[in-house]
Length: 245
Ligand code: PGA
Image: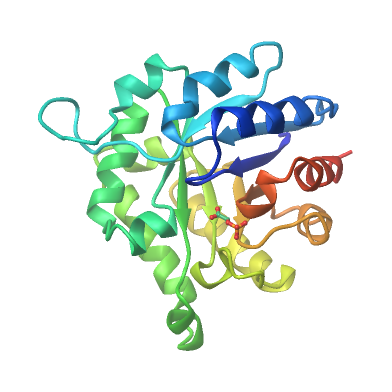
């Protein structure tokens, strides 16, 4: 399985900025790695066009839990599929904590993605107070369980990507230690193997940059990285991609 390097641009960029960023990135040979870019939704088609000559993947940052109709501001799975998205972030900590999406909402979004043949990146992770009270693994289990409890949940999850992103590490400049991340990744894989799920990619995210990426990627438990801030800088993101030989 190739390692995955994903860039989550969050609510940043303009068409000009994105053109420049992608054009620079495309100068980098990236055959050994699966690349997934998550632009803001107004720029999905624009990014898709820029990626026309390469087999990098397009992902959306959000998906509606509803199919269609009177849901102002929402973007449905069918629309994302229509725009050429292969992946979507579900349960990102900013959605959970800023937009108050609970486990039920995240699970609904997850099932809509699968319904439309879009691979969900299920983002899970503990807050700082949960970490400080040794709740990390409990929180991870609860967040996984909400998807496992869907009808045919284990089957759906088997085809997803998991991103372990400690909430306190996102955008803070302070990543988890590789040792702590490996413990959580091994736990996720072990929990899922009890449901017959093997070979599911488990990515690490949270203040990944060009300086710390290699040590995460050296670990066999880490199947890739979900990069926020550093993915907006072409040189940094290229350095991260280069960590995979
Ligand atoms: P960060 O964001 O790399 O800026 O910490 C990661 C993410 O939100 O996925």
